[in-house]
Image (cartoon, rainbow, N blue to C red; front, side, top):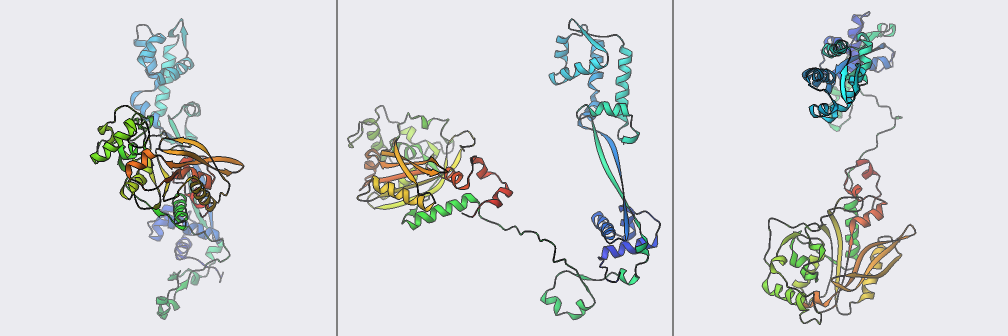
Length: 495
């Protein structure tokens, strides 16, 4: 016993139990004898003495029957079968039609089964009971049983208990474990010197070592270095943010500059500037988030006149436009941007003569129903190249380089259609033996660039970040990216 290492709470409890060797100790008596208020300390000290082989633990389990949620309601309003029997007596013609009018459907359905068990029969749709007194006597006994709760399950009426256990929510069973502890001979034979409470040191610090008198008389806490340690949980970047940073790094390495702008835009810059007709389905309320405040935003009238000419008859571009009548009010409506192209267009309008290579990775908003592949708020990767000699081979080479740096060297393109690019193409990458479409690209049409005064062709592309994230992370549900699942987040690879 000389090597026995007891904690101070275990020592204090051992002294108390030695003073009453034949007593059975529960948590309440331990708290009183040791002057503690924390039940965890009391039970922890008792279990510690059990582990040392000094105390024996005894357990007894008891079950208590209590009222459930529906049981409280039954006491207040009456059992369903009691109310049904009372209705039968009072009703002029207790038929099924009257029953369905007097009671809610969730009561009338189960109620028929309860009434049949009480001897009620249905003859040609009319409810009748040959022994109403016996039925009422049974219901009164059931009500009395509920009134008597809570009771110990061992002393409860077995038939009533079986009946109410088969009815949802009327009663609840609560199990309580009672633990007591008694001293073993080893506790009584323990050397009293081992039961003296001492100051325990669990951490050695430079300040402690400088106070010799403080640690010479103290006891150092023992640690079992053979036990497995807990894995430290460290903070880490969310996979989506890590992917965004990776994309930014790649484009910056390729000589691009990042573009950041506002979420709130006008329909003019968001759609009219991109030669999207004002009657296009994408402009409808079910597809775009229009704003009440601001409901509209001002646009330079000269700019709107340029768009009007382009849309109505093509202006000086050689295009025939879309025809119809261009509306300034529609163009000035406020909305949440549906793509980041609106910001690259505004950049071109501000710097039409300056060659540029810019990109953005930012949020866009579309009125989508949430499912495994769609979200109303998501991210878009956007980029443009404006310089002399910009052409389709340059665009395809740029995209191939980007995807190769992302780890997808197999890239192919195929013809496509977009209102504001010509030629247009869709970009696909090879993943797990399949070709997956990840975005669109093309060269801005003259109807887009000439009103802005651009000095050279403009190559443009856009792709959904979430779709790329699903590819990189191996997901089949886009919603997983935004669920706070810590276990999943911890298991994600470093991007």
